[in-house]
Length: 278
Image (cartoon, rainbow, N blue to C red; front, side, top):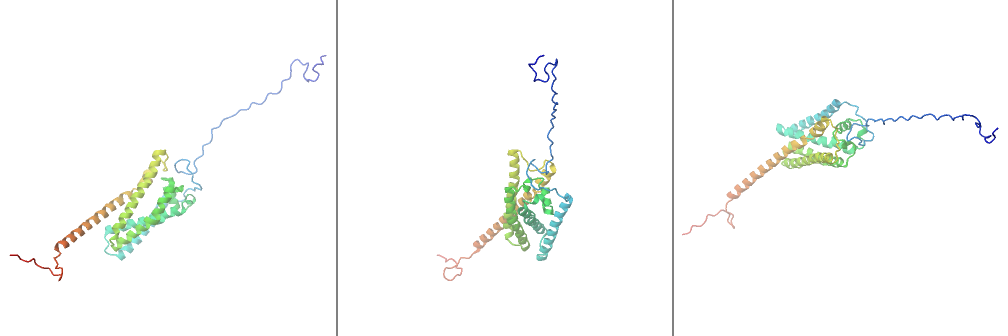
């Protein structure tokens, strides 16, 4: 009997007992689940904290905006015709343009300036309108510094100047053309900056703040802002031409008066005939 391996339990057996095999571990690889974005705005991944989708459908929002503007324009037209019954249709249309601008600048854009941090989570009519428009420019929901700067100037300077222009039209004040030139230049400059900053960023970085659907880029972003490039251009040329014509007429009147001014005697102030010489 071999006692050399007395301590090994399987010693002396013909076949050693094999330990149980380890269980086979199967590792299955899963592709990470792609979660849908928390909001519909571009560029993809832009941070919009607290976003809540609109509760009201788009037709209701547009009808609300149209109703508010229509009420303001009808009221302004009634007051203007009562103050100046001789106001022409062209002047009345011009007055409505500036009243609409004043309302949009002071109230709609002023709301953005004062509430830009909470628009994404708010459900009042103005906030929902901004969230709808922001589908074409998400900078309005990210407290973009450029948008805050230009909209602050628009709400607190250009808006009141639009109302001042409307009042000048009703009164027939000569200052209406000077005010009109200032406001039209402001609108043209603002539209140029608005388009320029967004499009240049898209060109140089490839990031667009607008959704790719044509409705949002061509309809909202281009279409809604294009009137503020076309109408101010027409009004600007009209006011410049009017001022030029009137100043030209005034210069002609001054020239005629200077030509007809009689020669005065230095002592008695009466015109004298030249002395005849032999």
